[in-house]
Image 1: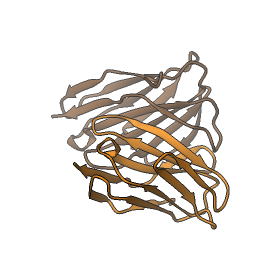
Image 2: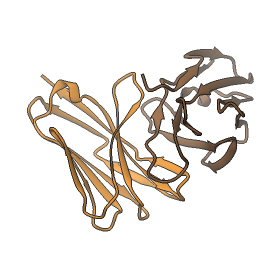
Image 3: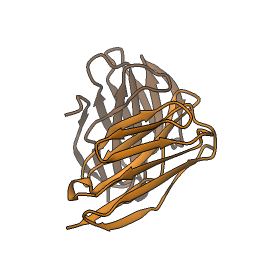
Length: 110
Length: 114
């Protein structure tokens, strides 16, 4: 069945360092979404990418959708303690089923 | 506040019992999704309803069932509970049912089976 894997599973960084999480799907996605879940919280929508090769930025966050629309990445520049949380990518299967990736838990040390 | 309301927030019950989790979607949203998140695990898709009809089903156990009512609220019924069913159950909603919709999560219902 459809699988969406993310690497790394965990990442510990010093505040100010960069961070990247990679998302890989076993099948082509029509679009990709990214969510952030703070510790003890619920997932919150960050962004959606639709076009092949699309790149979007939100302040220190850069999101990229692969040319084949099977992979994506999220890059955070100069991490801050407020970036702590688990980052999930998600893609639709058969238009009705939003499948989430395995997630990358980010810990930022001050 | 996402606008998605889930009750109860916490629930402790014994093995073999049955519980019902309730979800009220955001005003105007017709789709409701249910996800299960076990400790340190990802979000497992359970089921998706749109305007009262089941649209997609994930790896939902036969002991679990869900429905969406005419007023669009949804219930997830978990029966013959096992220890492994202990998890955080999220409800999410969106306006439509098609690919590209942003979904908004509730705060979840913590279920502990003892």
